[in-house]
Image (cartoon, rainbow, N blue to C red; front, side):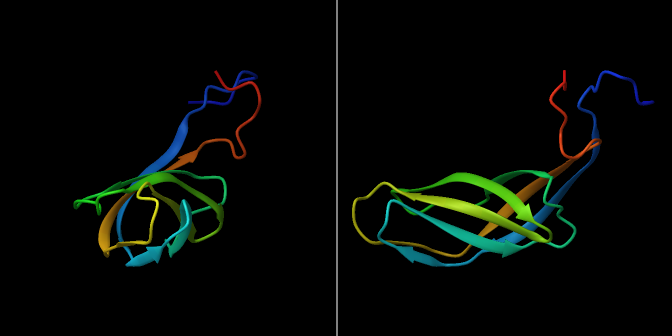
Length: 107
């Protein structure tokens, strides 16, 4: 689609990668795990899904990138105590917008 004065929010590309979420022990309410993901740009949008059962009381709160070639996954501890999330496969969907950073007039 050709560029117009009104940005439509088109995707330049969408990719899926399988990465390993390392085993993580934490007792705080949240912790962030940084994972290498080659080709990710700081302006990409990230969605992650764990393809195995999460440990009871642990959830994925957010996933994002603000550094090239790295994603950050925020894990949430709902147990109130120390918990260990075992290693698991992450399915990562990386979406690269046509215009980066996204302009304020995206429709």
